[in-house]
Length: 386
Image (cartoon, rainbow, N blue to C red; front, side, top):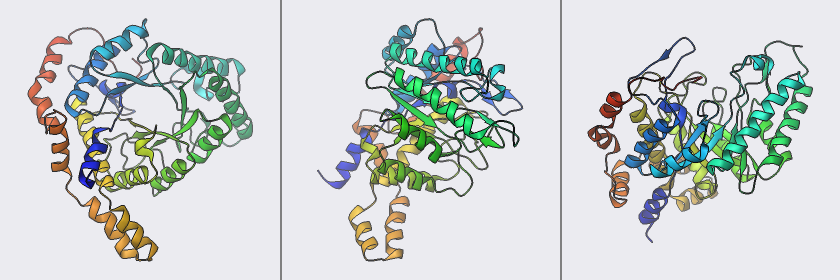
């Protein structure tokens, strides 16, 4: 197999998971902006996600968020997904929207509130069983706003205890993916603020516990690709939440703010074997002012382009330059790959896969946007808290 053929073959195996919540209404902390044709229930979210997969060919799974995507029959929801040509992906818990969680959830000083939070996480594992989902994705808004508000070490003890109970409930082939976030909504201490804290808990829990890297959850200037390389080296990178940020956790389209960073991350994924492992490549974005489905299609394409460039890095030339201590040549090898126009390559990959070479144009020509505006009349649109 030629080098180009190998790159094409790898790109054809790529899978990017889209989030159900990105198809609903969202906004800023000041306003949620409604759009015509937005899904009214999880079934319609899956219908939209299926369109993204139809035109990109690499988005076969859809992450759910509970309780936003709660239904009476999860088997029926999974069957609906399969009928549409997609599958249920990660089950995301929600322990940050109830009044009880004002002082935390799994780390709350009140045992009754902690019990409520853990029971919700166990419910999410039940949903994994019913839908065939592999991954339970956990993000906690837990933390404190003021020094002395609560005991930092005790909160870590509570976190470890709750995670351990949920970990023991996982079935064969199921994983726990623990996400971290530098700040927000907690401002003084956050209970899972960085990859080191997440890694420490996952290491103690066992092989089924992995770390999730959300690309928007870092301090300015953080070398995210170093984190990726380290977690891959330790076998503890479970997945990504891809998005972009200019200032904080902006949840913009992946690759929109810093496409070079996305390339650097994907290079470390390829270099560390993550592209052919169980690493989950998920989007975690909110499309507040742009049309939902086109924004998700564009995001998937951005991941594809960064991946294609990463796969084109001349590994032999790079290793030779690094061994020789040739700083400029080593950097040039990476930059040559990054500066490659991979859009013609990806058009070829899509054509060879029986897809339209231009996903955005194909979606616009499909009439789906006009159809859902006409058909989704009445009911309550999905969105934050729906």
